[in-house]
Image (cartoon, rainbow, N blue to C red; front, side, top):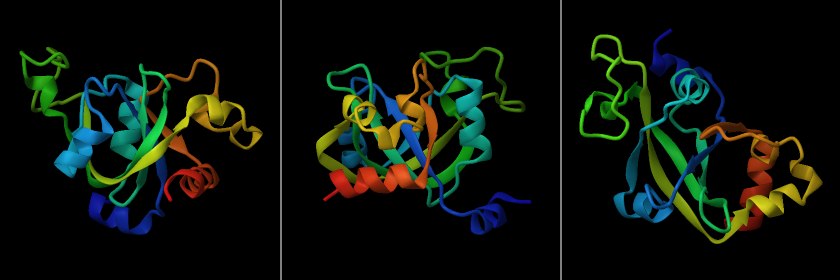
Amino acid sequence: MDNKKHSQTKKQQFWLMKTEPSCYAIDDLKREKVGMWDGVRNYQARNMLRDDMRVGDRVLFYHSNIEPVGIVGIAEVVREAYPDPTQFDVKNEHYDAISTKENPRWVAVDVKFVKKFIIPCTLASLKNDSFFNDMVVTQKGMRLSVQPVLKKHYERIITRHAS
């Protein structure tokens, strides 16, 4: 099944994508309007980008390695997985000497800015609300940069923070 046909038959999904704001922040995406989500070097996260993420999926944009950590806005997937160009650039920190253009190991997706929250949805607030006990990001040791999000979690966060 080709990606276009696959995209049309699959219902919208929701994701949480982590980034360090010193590398790429919600304000960078807001300024650029559309950005490449590159540099993912974990196979499980790569597989979600490659196999599951589709145009129209919504993304909770998460800032890590800053205080407070948490969800700072919303993005939308506008281009499905394609070979991450940083894997081929020897000057890039995400260079992968094993990857070749004929057999790339890593993928990127493009996301567009939707909204920045006035008040972030902190990880602490998620952990303190039993409604989010089964949300991947609240699980101990869960450090994946790309995570699936249940619709109920996405909707509750949007209701509280996107107004």
